[in-house]
Structures are given as structure tokens and as C-alpha cells.
Image 1 (cartoon, rainbow, N blue to C red):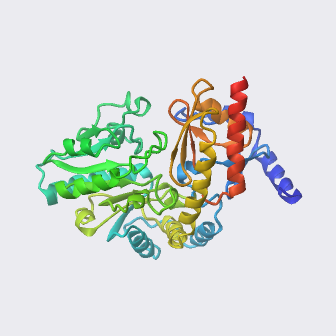
Image 2: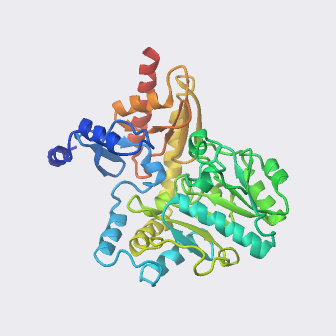
Image 3: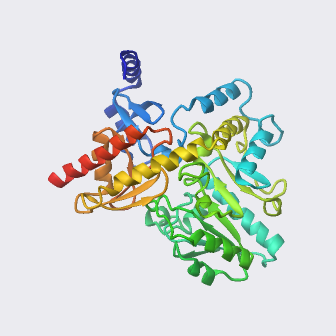
Length: 419
């Protein structure tokens, strides 16, 4: 970091406030629905973030894949700034000049006829559920109120009351009933279990091609293809939640691409907003999305001009294939380096592309303790269940910085072993 950058960072840090005071005020005045690491971030560029004390960290979480293209991506910010000066919101009561390009561009990226835009990932999942049920009643002929959707154990699709109704995570599920009916849980990774659960009233199978919150669980080879075949044979929609796994993260545009699988409905979010605004959508063909008619579903901010301008910039970046190739190449390096730690504090490594779940030996500490040790060494990552941590740096991260992050993990594990 040069002197000018240091001066700017320190001036901004001093203006932002004391970290201890800011954490105390945040904890006192906001609900405790998160347990953040004790760092207060102030600015960011590329794969690096800076806290209010001027210390830099390598971001190895990337907003749970919302920042695939890096903090402050110049092309995304340019599109946002230009749109901010012109028009930010109309509601869908009117057309606006950014909507058509975004809708057509995203549909083409997905190889689908049309999209339905929303804001958050959970909204997109809810949209897919509603579309599948409506399709089941109007197209498949399922009797009213009888539709069921098959979902996977250890899933994570969001935190609305409907979505947590079929969560197997006690933290997400317990205490929020009564729960929404109409879902059947089966084991993730077993196409046979899905086949056994399908009946005449099944309208869809909803799954993550890679389960992120569960610890970056990659299903067995052939699983997605088998699910695709089952859904086609049994007249059931295949819904792929690519909110975390999609848009370049795994080394392809979509995680389903690794098996050449095309679902009936893509559910997208996170990186679609470029780390700037919340943007989500479902994409499907007209015979599926065509069941939604005026007044039956919507969102005041869904498909707003700013969101569309940002989303179109993201689509343009993905069209080049550069980010997918970069995630593939760097992902190979990341997993090679992480596998070297197996037996030296690491029990197992999973993932695809620039996305890894690292199971730490529980005798050394929890995932939280490992994340805190990494933070002290200048790397930001986040734990999930037990002693697992997730690594998902922005795709713009350099190979050198990625290797340095793995070195810090090795050093952190050594510290815990010696403690």
C-alpha cells in the first residue's frame, strides 16, 4: 500500500469512528440475528477490505458470493453511477428503458424464454415455489391445494416462514411455526430418494447444485443428470437454486453446467447485483413462467432501473467467459493447496471452482475459533456448522493473494495446535 493510499485510508478510518464503540452500539441497538466477527469494515477494493483502524484484510467470503466480481468493480460501478443520475425507481406500473435489455440478457444467459425479477434470493425462491405450484394446478392438473415439492435435507434457500418450514437446521427452523405444508424432505445426493418421493401431485424438485450453507457439499457425479432425467420422465419441474453457486463462482456460469444439465427454473441472486444492490430473478421458459398473470405476483422494487442497469453490467461481464475461466483456474490452485493441509489440522476439503468447504479437526477448535484466528492474520472467512469454514474469495483475487490466504490458514491451525 503506497503512502497516498495509507493517508486516505487513515483519514477515512478516523472519520468512521472507534471500532469498539461501533460494535458496542451495533450490538445494543440491533437485533442479534447475526454473530459477526469483531471487525468493522470501512472501505474495499477488489478482493481487499479495510477496517476503521486502517487494517487491510483479504476477503475470502465475498458476501456469500455476492461479490464474485470484486469490491468496487469499475464496470459495475460505472453502470450504477450513470443510472443513479437518471432514474432509480418506477415500480413495474410503467416500463423503463433498462428493463428490456436486462430481461432479454438474463434470459439469454440462462437459455430461457423469460425472467421474473425480484430483489433478494429468498424472494426468488418464494417466486419459484409459487410458479411451480401454479404450473402444477394449471398445466399438470394437480388437484387444488394438493401440490407438493420435494426438497433436500440440509438445504438453505432463505429465511422466510415458508422456506424455513422445510429447513432441517434447528436455528433456522425451530420456534417459527406453524409451518407451511406441501414439502417433502429427502436425502441430498440421492436421486433414488427423489424418485421414491415423487407422486402424482409432485410439481417440482428444488435443490442447490452445491449446498453452500451446509458446508459446500458437492453431490456425487451424475446426481444432477439423474435428477434431470427423473423430472423429465415424471412430469416434474427441476428448480435449481443457483443463488450462491451460479454466475461464475464454480468455474462455469452455473454449477449445473458441470454436468451439462439445464433445469426448468433457475433461481438467481447475490452476484446478480454485483455487490451494489439486491437483484434476484427466476428464469424459465414461457410454458412455465407464463402461468403468472398481472396481479398474481410482484414487487415494488423488483426489476427497478438501477437494479437492471447493474444486472446488465454483470451479464456483460459473464458473456466474456473471463470470470468463469479465472474461477476454474484459481479454483484448481485453491483446492490443490488446501488438500496439502489434510492431516495437518484439516480433515477434509470440498468444493468446486473458487468455493471450498474446509473441515477442521474438531480437537483444534470450532469453525468460529478458526475464523477468528484467520481474522487476526488478515484473512476474513466465516464458519458454518461445527468446525467447518467456507472460503469464497472474489473471482478477481490474485493467485499470490490466494496462496497467501492458505498460508495463513496453515499458520492459524498451527497456532491452535500449539495452544
